[in-house]
View 1 (tube, rainbow, N blue to C red):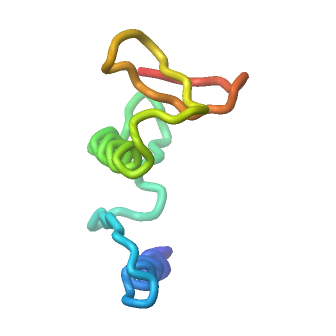
View 2 (spheres, rainbow, N blue to C red):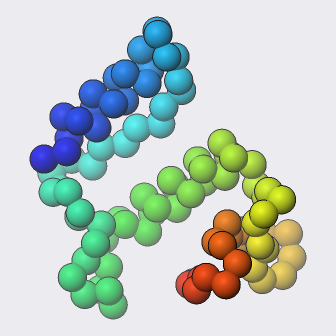
Length: 92
């Protein structure tokens, strides 16, 4: 489906001409959209862990907080959201 295009994009970004550092993780044996369960109350196993890993990498790349981010909760371990003001935010 989109596998060949994703791999080609990864290869182009990591090529000597562009030279980006790319974190790429292909989930074997699952179709496109595997992370979108038909029943939101029964999420697909492993989805949470993959999204948490992706969010951790995004925090590493973009920094823990920025000028336009809103800290939700209390204390230093509060989750960070870059949602636009007035948008609906869901936090577990």
